[in-house]
Structure formats: structure tokens, C-alpha cells
Length: 154
Image (tube, rainbow, N blue to C red; front, top):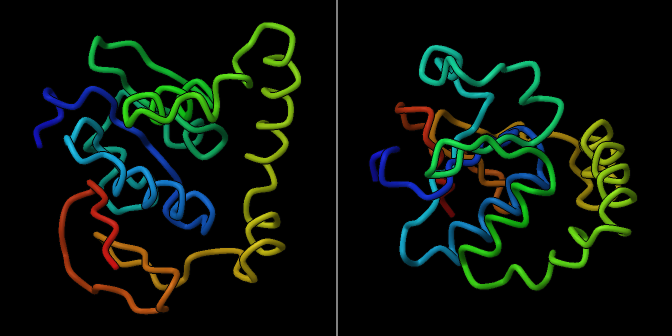
């Protein structure tokens, strides 16, 4: 899919096991191809997406909406799950009173995502990533060369 046709382009950390798992769930749920998933850790990322600051993208989840709006953090998560019909899971985190607390918790998670991944998955980083995939379930990399667009393969 071309970037112009994507309703949402998500820029995620392909070395974070939990991040990769969420992107894999989103990819499988996105039967209509409404999202583009881009690993910020891939070679050539900065050149391919000069409008995204790589350091900022390593700090908080970034996305470009189809209308040109840039989304950050849980707003990205909410928009992504809404596009696949499951935004109700995240909606309470965007409610006015809860939003402030949820955003603080998200920022803590984002800063500590490798540690949290280690606690929950036993793996702090995806060390089996190739240019086009990160398969944390089987420990096998696709080893293929390619673009920065992620096509998480199983």
C-alpha cells in the first residue's frame, strides 16, 4: 500500500518485543489494509521519513494520520484500534479524567519498555530482527533485505 492511501502510518520500535506483538496484532486485525506499520529501527528510516525525529520516535509512539495530523502515544493506540473496530478497548484511556493518568502511565511504560518487555516476555529486545521482520515467537529472522515498512512475518 502506498503511504498516501494509508489512513494511519504508525512508527514503532521494532526492537521492543511488546511493541512488535501489538503491531502484529494490529496487522492481523487490519484486514482492509488501512494502516502502514514502520519500524523506526530499520536502516534508512530517517531518510525515508525526514519529518519524523528518530530520537522523539524512540521516546514516544508516533503516527501520521491520513489527513496529515501527527498523533503521539496513546492517541496513536486509540486511533489504530479504532480503525480495526476495537477502539472500545482503549476508549476509557482517552476519557478526560482518566486521560491524564493514562498518559503519565504510558510515558513511564515508553521509557521502560525494554524492562517491561523482559518482565512480561522474558526478552528485553528483539534480537532476531531483520530489515523486514521481527519474529519474537520463533526466534527466526526472515533475513530478507527491504524497505523500512514493516511486514512482521510469522
